[in-house]
Image 1 (tube, helix red, strand yellow):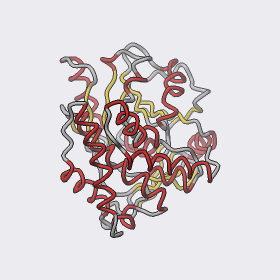
Image 2 (cartoon, one colour):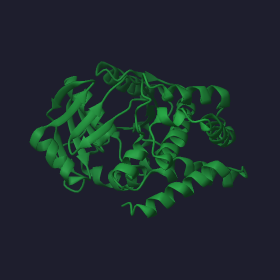
Image 3 (cartoon, one colour):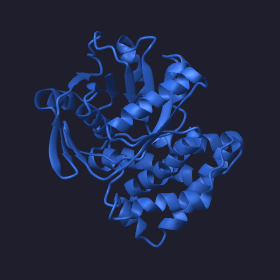
Image 4 (cartoon, rainbow, N blue to C red):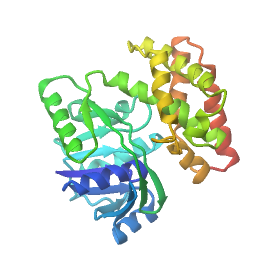
Length: 314
């Protein structure tokens, strides 16, 4: 299958590498020219659970996509604020038959994607894999994970297409599953991003270090309650104690506790703008819409934006 990974950063790089190693024809598209050049010159390199591996894929700068590189499947990993621009750039390689799978952090991305493709070709999900970058074209990948997804539009054909994507990802070792309740799954994953990303970024720590503090659980509970209240207005039952327990599993130093979330990598390490407006910021905006107070999400959004300005993030 011809697969295009849009956004070959840490997570997109993991998917590109694993899908390529499984025998798929993979292209990468990225806005970071140095990353694209490194991939084309040296391959996509990774420390993959302690083993040095290389995947030979073709990479394109976002503004220089080869229109002949038509994709059967596009998997979206750009930063949330870059999604509309990425979809515009992808237009030459998208046909009426191209499937679009969005595995990005945040909530509501299908509202942008459906401006470019029909809803029966849109699939949404979330991924619980971790990934890091050590430089242009160089990844650090460890641990296990999973991915859940579903078709946006109901119907037998769309469901069958979603299950084919599940098999494709699972055959590459990505542990995919079909989820009838994907909006619940996306909200649940968003609570991990809504706690670990912003808090670890502001506190400049990894997830295990955060979990070792005496105030960690109280902060997580407060944020999850806000996510749960907003989700309830959208018909999603997000159980607070279960979700908090789920988040606490990320603190284990024997699994992924030593991982620095992607927002920390973006802002603290690379001084790049973050996706906070598409995670906690969504809860802030929807809280105002529904008349629900969300002081923790609002304050955390403000803190991250202040940190962006202090670090002159771009």
